[in-house]
Amino acid sequence: MRYKTEFKIKANLKEVFAALHQYKIDRRPGELFGTVLPSWLVKNDFRVLTSNTLGLGAVYDWKFKILGIPILKFKEKVVEWKEGKSVAYQAISGWKMFFRTELEPSTEGTLIKTEIDFSPMGFVIFDWLFSPVVKWGLNKVYKRMESNIEMAMRNRNYKMRDEEEKYYSWLKKTAGILAPYYDTVAIFISRIRNKVVDFTNARNGSRILDVGTGTGKQAFAFAKKGYDVIGVDLSEDMLNVAYKKNKYGNVKFEVADATNLPFEDNSFDVSCVSFALHDMPSTIREKALKEMARVTKPKGMLVIVDYALPKSKISKFLIYHFVKLYEKYYPEFIKSDLEALLRKSGIEVKEELPVLLGAGRVLKGIRIDDDGLRCELSYEYRHIKR
Figure: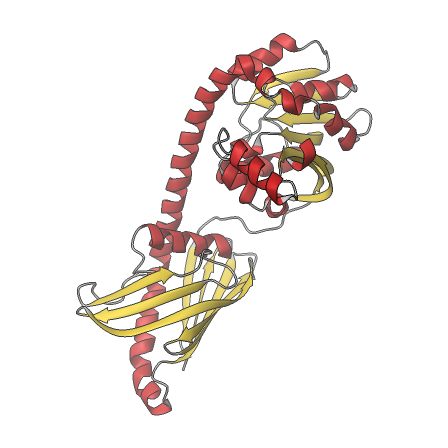
């Protein structure tokens, strides 16, 4: 038995499914796509059995009950995952099922095509008798998807805003306390400032943006080489230290949020962020990198300096557990796929330089055009029954 449906949505498939999963995991995991029948009559329990809620190899467990009596259970696994293109699930126990979703970009939006091919009862005659009920249920499910996706995205955005508000509050307090002592505390990274400039190897006359400039150490290192530099930071306390130490006529400082830079597109030859990304939650980090890419000229250079882990298992263990004692967002940052985030943000890494005995690294990349789909939601459903 086969059922097909189509609907349009302006969104990245991974973000939508991630939002749906997270919403259901956080709120009501038993209703992934909404309740078809009254909850007092039918209840479906849903669990993620793997560490990854989405992506290749993710496994889910489903249990359906009527009036509290279990009537059906099965497990399904993601057997195909092409980010932004398609995802396919296959039942690995319980019944024969294959569920596939394909993403087809268009000028009007993105067409999401779904197809379910399954045999719940295992016998042709029973499946034929059962098919009207299944089609009715699936039709109800897909009609509920619009409202559930909206709720999921709202919940996801709410969680992001809440996390970001906490971050800004934490940053203001921490920067205010650290500003007078920051250069002393961070003396261990001072020696690599000139290495970053040499590794960047920007051409003469380049205009350089230093994001998260703090007390201006990296901006001063670029300025010493004759480049025109603008350093931005959200902390006025940090910038007050930078103002006092500034003895260069070719460097300026501005108070600015890295997620909303006050510059026109294509304004800088080089954009640099030095030991700031690890201090950001993932949502802020992504926004900041996209803003850096936006203000950098096409094929311009982007330089990222931050923590890494040495290859030695002992050194890796010691450094990780030491740094996480004083860096709030470090554990999440160091475990994340920074290169993937850079690609998503429109930055292609070209070279890498290990520093601090492997505990840090400098990545040099170029801005590339990002034609990816943005997460703007608008829906138009068109159901096709076969």
